[in-house]
Image 1 (tube, rainbow, N blue to C red):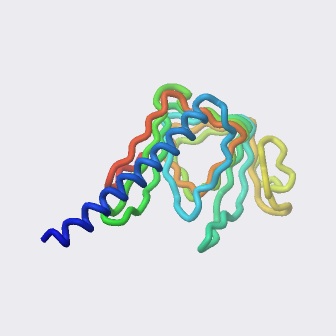
Image 2: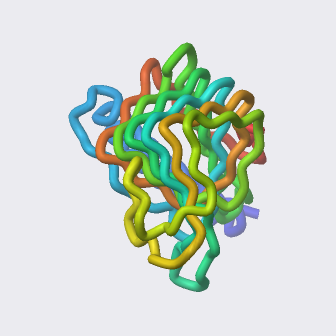
Image 3: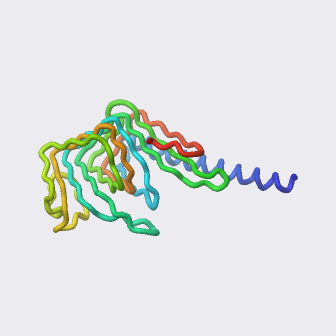
Amino acid sequence: MNAEAVPGKTRWRLFGLLLLVMLLLTGLLLVALQEGALAASFTVSGVTYKASADRFNARGVAQFGSVDQSPKAAHPVFVNGFRNATADNFCQSFQVPVPVVGTMTVRIDAPGGKGFAADNLVLGIDNVAGDISFDDVEIGRDAGTLDRGPHPNAQSGTFGIQSEGLHIDQLRQEAWSTTAGSLKLNSVGIKSEPGAHDCF
């Protein structure tokens, strides 16, 4: 009995230590983002994340097809670039497999009006849903000529969309990657717990 109990106790201590380090680093990163002290540039590699918001507003929009590359596969994505964007009651979640425990969900919430704000935001989206409206939209434009929003790696001769503005009510989105020139999260809260506790 004792021989079996000791290894189990050691694994839980290791898990607790790793979890504490991860949450500390995540917290420091998000505090820096919240204060506007750090320009965000990151990719969710090999794992999709979910994001939701009651209302998403953006100006300077560019959209086109592309590919996000993970270590194991290429993922077709619908790239959405925004000069600036805000979201009300923003939530982001992703799942992490943890030995012994199983699936763990990390969830980030920025409640209230404009809890999320970003400049030069580029998303590699797998799917998106909501009530969407555009301002002054051009559909079917050559992606290589898009000039209203950020458009890294847009291939000339491919299908593109651009508009002065975009508005989404009840945003539900799954994506592979996010980059931004600046990203701010107001009153941010981070929660990590075993099981599936996604934003939607």
